[in-house]
Image 1 (cartoon, rainbow, N blue to C red):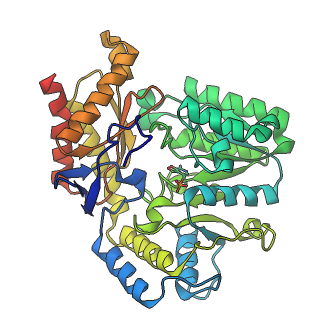
Image 2 (image 1 turned 120 degrees about the vertical axis):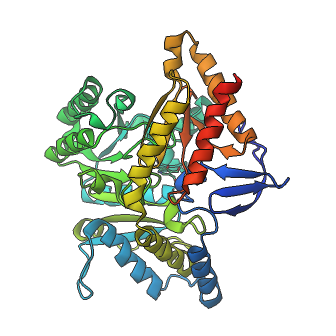
Image 3 (image 1 turned 60 degrees about the vertical axis):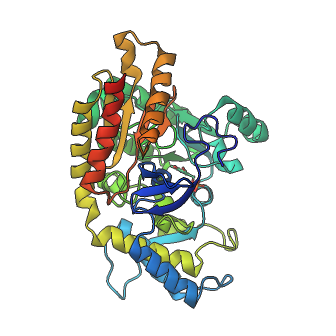
Amino acid sequence: MGAGRSHDPHAGLVFVRGCGDTLWDTNGKAYLDFICGYSAVNLGHAHPRLLAAAQTQLAQLAFCTGATHPWRSELEKKVAELVDGPSLESNETKSKVWLSSTGARAVEIAWKIAFANRPGKMMRFHLSYHGRSLATAHISDTGSSDALRYDVGVNASMEDQELHCVIPFPMCGSQCGSQCDGKCEDCDASIDVARHWLDCHSEDTSAMILEPAIGARGYYFASGAYFRRLVKLLRSYGVQVISDEIQMGLGRLGSMIASIGDGWKPDFVVLGKSLGGGITPISAVIGDRDRMDKLPQGFESETFAANPLACRVALEAISVLNDENLMASVSRRGNLFRETLRESISAGCRVDGRGFATVIDLSGLSNQGVRSDDASRIAWDWVCHAQGHGLLVHLTGVGRNRIAIIPPLNVGDAALQQAIEILSSFWKVK
Ligand SMILES: Cc1ncc(COP(=O)(O)O)c(C=O)c1O
């Protein structure tokens, strides 16, 4: 395991069991899983209600080709309601849902539907990540320079046509935090690039795809005020908005739909990862019925999309997220976690985040005379120290000098405290 993942401090670990917030390796060693499949396991491993739903459905009907089944229509309604609010039993939901299997496929489908409504180029954020399929790699920062060369090489024909425009993501998060009014220097610079592009290309731009916070490429956060300003600008040019909430939706930032929780409404929302409860791959595109219906009939199909097993597990996952009233607690407990963490670690390390998405940024260590490659080395050592003490956290960021902490949303207080003790003990041994 871990072949080809030399950039990952956890390469080589082999896990054989998971329960709640804990994973066990082949030697029986336990680890707090504060990576959670980058939000795929938001409800922890082997959640009893998800297991029961999966087992029941496996025995009843796991798969049927093409045909519809009751769990599919029920799930479409429940997912639409995440955006629309509860609908009356008899009423058709305002939004329509297209179910798919992986995140990348759902992004492609959203892209196709956006294109069917308004043909043209795509805008995206610098540092955005939307998947590794040939199409989504083209609108993603694919990480290492080798991967970039490969993807750009494969996509050379697309690149030639300048299919998309890249907007800088404001890096003000760690300075302004959630207080940012969306008008600081960084936000202004980002908005200016978008406005400049739109002034020249509004007629041939289809949509902008956004992540409500940058996930895979470093856990960077911008305020709701910035997003509202950007979305208003895009709308004024008639450009559609796709919110890729595959990693940050379904509670990671403290709301079921992150964009709506932040006060802006995209034309399309894309969900994935934890929709399948960490058990089955399933993803969804949600948009207004009129827009969704523009995708020509027969233009999309996938063998495994929306199979009964995946739908049944997704229904239960949504129900658990709602039932356990997690959303209300995620922001409060996430903030408390960050406050305690901040007090426990070296002052040169900045702690930023929202909901249960937290990052430690080591770039500030340079103000204390640490060279930037040394900050990356310290970040690597810190992640390895945590692993040695039974805590899995994720090394990330442009300079590999950030540590993302992604616990399950239903994590217990004792596990959070244990994680803080392990992380702070790194500085005591140094
Ligand atoms: C924001 C975002 N979009 C898309 C994807 C791709 O999802 P998948 O790996 O299921 O194709 C990911 C995966 O990490 C993601 O974080």
